[in-house]
Length: 245
Image (cartoon, rainbow, N blue to C red):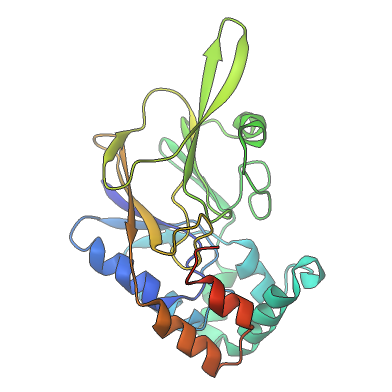
């Protein structure tokens, strides 16, 4: 089976459409790791577009925030404004869809969580120490996560002196064997990358060959930015899309 693995679309329809076009014909099923909404201008359209395909989707922290399940006082000001706007914008159908989403799932050799296996909705796995502590919280060989908006692989290593964690940046456009070591794998963000590269980030997972093909694709950022301006969204959220920060 070939899976299109996406995360953190964040209501950015132009970016999502670019990913779907770039991956067309190369996947059988979509795994979405959460945060369909928040930050961007097209929450209902992105949800509807995902539903055009066989898929499963997880709930992320922004999805929960849009449903009122999280206290958004911990969000920064711009994120709070975007959440409040999204809450008003969601259709009943979109709200019902988000309410149906689980926070984590197990699919054969893969555990799926938005943030981490330890804290599926909120924890940021940004360094090998946090990653290493999370291996105790899932039993499958691999765990797919999002939330940080940064593509990365944390691979568990065992040596005579103890256990550790290796940090790998996935090669772009090359099929990478997942290997026998357990790993936490992040495809990056479709709709708001934060690794200095503004291109939409996603991956193709082939479970027959057990390979991970991480990809970047440019999209018309200005289309999303113009929609955000028209909706009165915060300037910082608009500008950051062009810089991937």
